[in-house]
Amino acid sequence: EQALELRPDHVPLRCDLATLKRDFLGDVDGARELLDKAVELEPGSLPSLRALAQVKAMQGDVVGAEQLYKKALERSSDDAESLSGYGALLRDGGGDHVQYAQVLIDRAVRVAPDSVNSYFQKALCHSVKEE
Image (cartoon, rainbow, N blue to C red; front, side):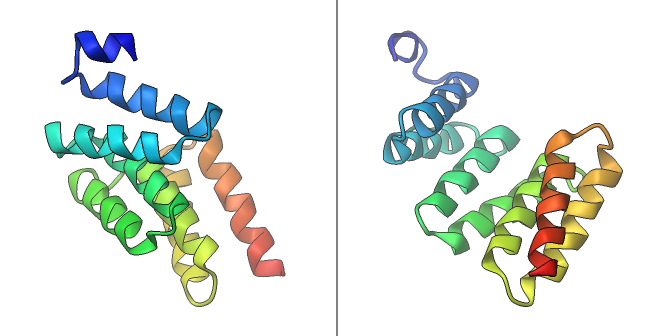
């Protein structure tokens, strides 16, 4: 956080710190605060939009998360991380959304065949369909 005091407007630093807070400290609210500011500073930042979408989903704001993933995909329709993240969000929602989730994740695999996360999300989609 000392680095953030020196560079409060540095969006990548805010994203990295938010990821640490979310994943290693379990501080989802702290991560949300950092990411809200990051998106305010740079509304088109794909990493900020994706990370904030993940945090909103963790907080139960599925609609807000979906809006952020859609915004990210408007900026870059072939962004594999946004495609697989949005697909995972829909997959976790279950029901009729699972088919569309599969479409998004399959597209992520096609546009980034070297993305391990996309293949992981695809496998999870198949396990949901088999249940």
